[in-house]
Image 1 (cartoon, helix red, strand yellow):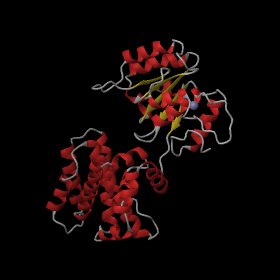
Image 2 (cartoon, protein in one colour; image 1 turned 60 degrees about the vertical axis):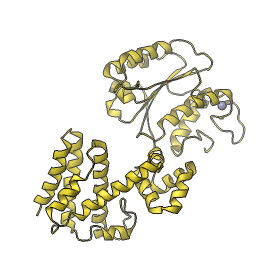
Image 3 (cartoon, protein in one colour; image 1 turned 180 degrees about the horizontal axis):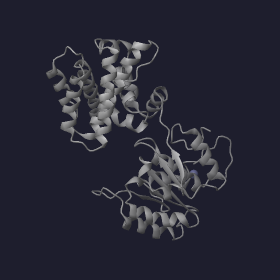
Image 4 (tube, helix red, strand yellow; image 1 turned 120 degrees about the horizontal axis):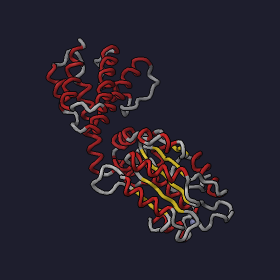
Length: 347
Ligand SMILES: [Zn+2]
């Protein structure tokens, strides 16, 4: 199994199923690959296209890789210079993929392949296709041209029309637990090994903050980002410190005002706060529950020691509803003030 789709970590069942389909020439005409940014959607799509067109596909040597990675087709597919593997994404400066772009793509699908047996059309950010573009795509999916495979990549499957979903095979990329993620990130990045040795806390914080997504952890390993992680954790700690009822309101108010003003960043920090509160609640119940925000039991004890269970649960609920409000387009400055006032109100 470890000789199939070797550029993608984990995802063993998907790799087995799709590589077998490539070997037996039964790959579905259309696939919908769903997962967060950095979870390997693009790598998986490339592996599928390379496997189907690999010149060593029929070679059954023991331990032979699929795709082989060394034939002419594989090499050019990996480098993005193969004429029969086509990529469509959002044009720069545009928020969506429009119907014109889709139509051009669709016309090309009806031309015969230049070199390969199978033509592949990979649509990145497929959830950004306008409804008109999705309908244009639907026409092809209803009667797909022979020897053509369409692979849609997206983070949010609910934005894809159900008529498209019903004509594609759904694949969800795998998210990793802490230990697996640690092993994969170390295998991919020398920076990871160095950081783990020099600053194990920071390395651990990156793994915890990446939500099980390899690409996100690798991005955060870049220097600028590790500082952002430290800042994010400091925000969470300052917030927890301001929660005891005896703490002055001004402290709580400052801690909420110091939270990020950008929607996505704020959501990440609020999720961290919620994880920290969950750790504290769990620690009151049992010593055996491993923390998911705090890096160690000691750090957990240092923070939030003065908070009782009732207070923790009240704040947890307030944070949960604030996270839901972010998606409802509320004004962020109002939301931050509301958090402080609502927590203060629970006396
Ligand atoms: Zn090959």
